[in-house]
Image (tube, rainbow, N blue to C red; front, side, top):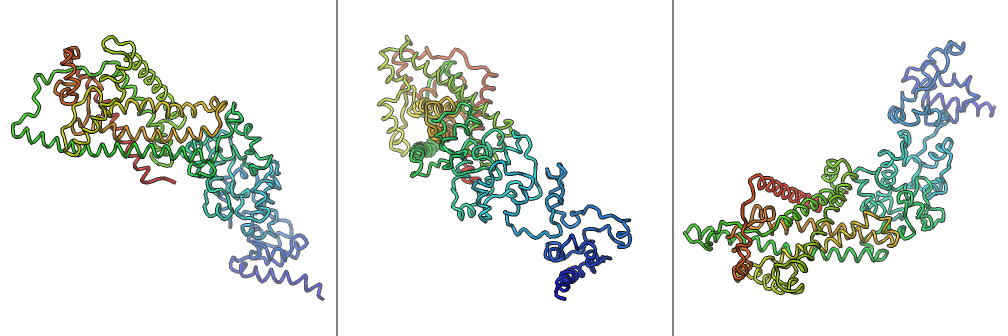
Length: 616
């Protein structure tokens, strides 16, 4: 009697659970009836306890509507259409690689009559996936696999990267989708601050990657051009760096890095892949490099921005005073033949300055989007160039132009010091003479005079051929070439420099190149633009650098001591311009000049916006 009861009880349980559903759906066949024939294959107890336990048999086998016909074999059991209930999962599966390969729901869910909820237990996912996908890449022994097997539901399982049903094909290993995939899925977990904290995982992995050249290109939308997470750590067999089998173990780094950097050496692998410049304990070299560069930036900007602000105010007042004097009929500075033109720059100087403008704007337009890769405008600019690779090509072409004008500056300096016949004195006298761009004691006097003028304590100085701010600009070219140019060459040819420099030198070079570029662009687009074009005496543009000429009135007012020296030497007419520049020339060059000015100011605004609204 007890045996019969144990057999009947599950049937009664299934009938009780299924009948309300059957009544609601108008099912013609009671589940107990089905089990009368199929009870030897389907356990009533397991079915009742499964996720489908509240469903009647004909909820899935909808073609069985007449029991008699089914029993006679006239109506066969067809394939179950899971989509009738599982619309979301079916829609995801329909676009997956499984559907393309003919893998249906039943291939994974073979236990349809006994299937219970997975309750987010990732171990069940792995157990299901390995039935087809044999663990050939060592996932079970990886940090992720061990974590899941140990019951850590934060650890990554198959579905965390590949999803449960919306499983896409990996596709071409070099494709955009593939390259994006094997970094994006890693960032999803390692960028979760709470998950990282409770599992005691390094918090700097994502931040340091996105701050690197690789990460910036990934963020800009070009992951196929750089290394992603899986390139270094592999996709499945991820092991701690201390493990001898780890792809990032020091003994294996030459091979790992060599996948992209074919000529990478042991020295090259000393690169800090996740080095943080604010971590003094672990990366002191990066920390102090960053501190030094930050000090250079803040110091330079503090001095020259204050200088610019004071000049702006004082120049505005002076212009008002001049306007008032003219209204009263006073001519402050009458210059005979003041309209006559005199040459300040030779054509070679004009050409050199055009090279400077073209190269600097090209470097800024292509470099700033990389530095501020978290900004929407950076992606727009990269799109205009046709992608990061094109931007890199343009950047390097402009760098080449920079080396050209730097070589010209060296050649001009040698010619000035040793070859020119129209200058008196030896090379030392020329170096510190009035025609030289090298700072001398007079510059101190000029600085003091300008400060006194700023505070209404004296007259504005009358300068010689070069002012102290022009000399600073010129010297900055030399400093910039060693700082930006040197670090840029290292980053341009990492394998060559990595053959004799330790890899962390590239971390240092990255900091110097980035911060020095920020200093250069910030200085040029604010201080230099004001000194040459924006100051009240010159606004909106000083055209002398484009045609090399300035009027006698302007010459005497701005370079009074230079003019006085020329008069004393009797050489003023030697610098007289025989003819003015043509209309077409002026129009083209002014258009170019205003375009360059507009681009620079636009980039300045975008830089300020990036600092105020940093992306994530």
